[in-house]
Image 1: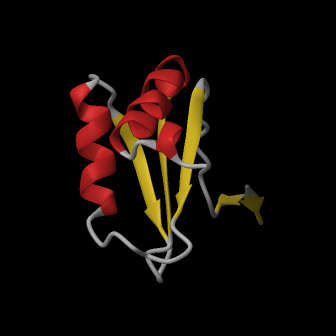
Image 2: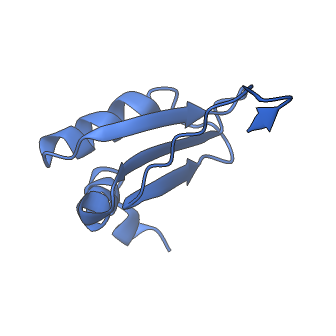
Image 3: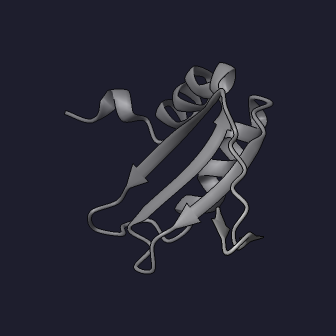
Length: 85
């Protein structure tokens, strides 16, 4: 962005990435971040960026778009989400 002929902010755009977000309504598991990143790392998925809310109830991270399904499946397996009714 230019203001009076000077650049005041540079914006970099990354394409072909996916944001995966997790919510823990009750904060039952205080080690959720370590489990999340260990699970995706086991599948060879590289995490590009991480964001966590101040209450630790939400966690979001960015992966390459081609790794999104692998990462989501790793999380389903790690937290046994298929067993939840």
